[in-house]
Image (spheres, rainbow, N blue to C red):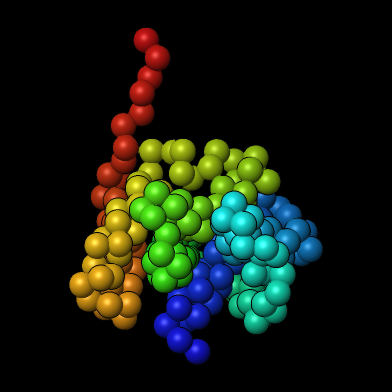
Length: 200
């Protein structure tokens, strides 16, 4: 198992957990919890694969992701009501965001994507599952709120784009992973938000 696989499995686990958290809060039944966890964990990657025309999305050909989805969705079910929801949800979601963005970014760089396609691949993989989760539960998607979310993904991905030729895969991916996570968490903890434009 290489570093990319580890990042992907970490992202799958984290996003499955965040999907399960939302499903529990929305009072989904057990089947609904696991379905929403799966959509959250794999939705971004499926969207990326469809748009970049790689054929059948990798999720439908790689069954090694299923145990991580099940585990990620089961832990919130077992620990429901025992942990502080907001802080844990944001932390788990930030882990998923950073892991998916970086793993997708490394693959895009190895495929010689241009900058625009690279940023699309990292962003849609990082935030796509969360957007689908929020749409299904009739919530305003996180990326359209004032929280610094997709911006963290874009900034960290740009850093990866510039560091990769200089430092190689191992160092650049870890730096970018930490940067995305820290931007997301610091902005959340310090309540640093993007401005909202109000109509007069």
